[in-house]
Image 1 (tube, rainbow, N blue to C red):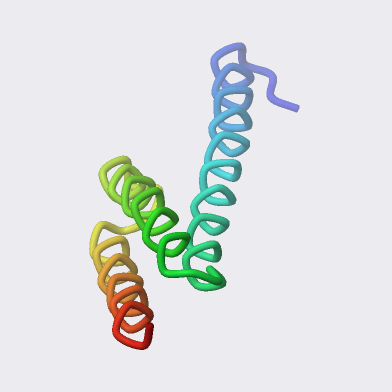
Image 2 (image 1 turned 180 degrees about the horizontal axis):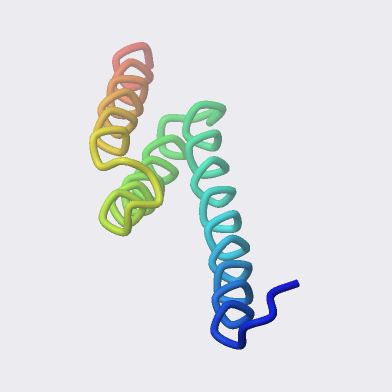
Length: 87
């Protein structure tokens, strides 16, 4: 345990940020998975819209690298596009 008051504050803030980031990352992964496992085109498109929003926010706040967010959006868009062509 830290002996200095500011160190203990930083430790608590770090713990809170870690929990918040873990929850956001989990929500992001779930949104991406919902796009990939969608049964219908409409379901995939609505899940894609939600995933794009979460990816944009995650990239801006550096939860994930902005280029990774862009790459994932591109791959998901290609996946959804493939579903609409197949239908």
